[in-house]
Amino acid sequence: GVFLRSPPRVEFNGVPLWVQADGCHRLFLHEDGSWRLSNSMCNVSGQGALRSELCGRNRMPHWFWSWSVFDGAGWKPMPSVAISDDSSKANRRLAEQDAADWLKDSSRSLVRDASESPRVPAYRGHYSLSFQTAQEAPAHRDRGHSSLGFQTAQEAERFVQSMRSIGMKNWVL
Image 1 (cartoon, one colour):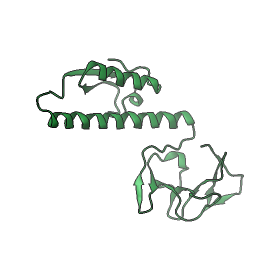
Image 2 (image 1 turned 135 degrees about the vertical axis):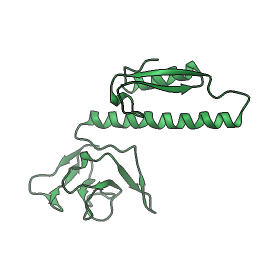
Image 3 (image 1 turned 180 degrees about the vertical axis):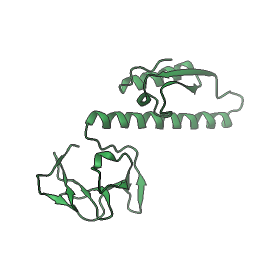
Image 4 (image 1 turned 60 degrees about the vertical axis):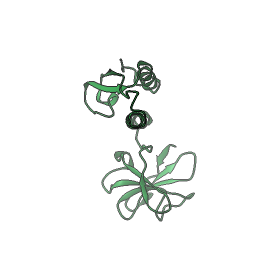
């Protein structure tokens, strides 16, 4: 959701409090220096439901890209969380994370398929993807050309179509 900065002079632990526009959750600076999202309505104390991975006494919450969720037993990384001062940046970051997760999951399935069915080669072809910007190459973070392996041309095309559907228009086979 959208969070708005609290009115001037309303601070918590010496920094602005961020209030959910369409709800009652708060982003607040915890006493340990991490940013937290309140896990109960109107509460800005305690542990929170989300926390920034790094301490942020000198930074606002949108500077942090790594967040964790409390699952009842401990803090677990939550890569699907993005806090940004611009919603398009947050959406782009989440799309990049989805693409990186898809690539990681696909490579695992290719290896598993090869070990379970040695008669069928797991690697039937090699298709290249060209990236125009670093943002379009989430797994590699470099400009230019990168290569990925797919079992079939159809699988490669499905991947490119999924990238285009989330706004990464310059991916080509």
